[in-house]
Image (tube, rainbow, N blue to C red; front, side, top):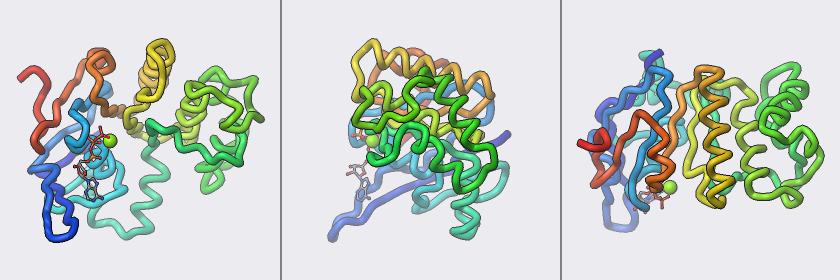
Length: 222
Ligand SMILES: Nc1ncnc2c1ncn2[C@@H]1O[C@H](COP(=O)(O)OP(=O)(O)OP(=O)(O)O)[C@@H](O)[C@H]1O
Ligand SMILES: [Mg+2]
């Protein structure tokens, strides 16, 4: 499996100023080694994940999925690719407040798959929420809401899981549990797993580590 960034640059124009966030970043993700990208606040971690997940387009360079340039896909094809191949987990969970746990997990599945409900129940069981199916987000703790978000990210059985500071709002014990769950579930199903964080103690748990600084991506420790 090949999934890579090829000399990707990204800049934003706001008003009359132009800000370059990423400069010719290249990255090859292919194996099943969980990857962490570390960087300070504002270094471009979320920007990088958005490009990887096709939520935003590079200013220059290409994002290649199995040799295909995401930038060359139509909007519909890109949306379909994202829905099928990519799961996202965010710091702020981003659950729909009016839907219960089961319904939140089902949401991406409604767009696609049969037997989604059975699968959603199974996933919620795997993340330890088998008894919380009909709880609304506000009736769940932060860690529990993040477990729902993880189940939602996995419902389409994507090839890639992208996590943006997924434990940023959790205490140490819950962070550890969520990280363990993410590493475990992605290893079991051989997904490409990429997590971004500013936090050393999280990054230390990964074998493949990169550092994002001044728009450049380097292997950590070099
Ligand atoms: N849509 C946008 N328009 C203009 N500037 C943007 C936009 N998105 C991000 N930026 C700028 O790009 C830089 C990188 O932002 P990004 O959100 O990727 O950082 P980050 O590493 O995820 O930070 P944090 O750890 O705080 O989440 C910031 O300076 C930000 O202000
Ligand atoms: Mg961010």
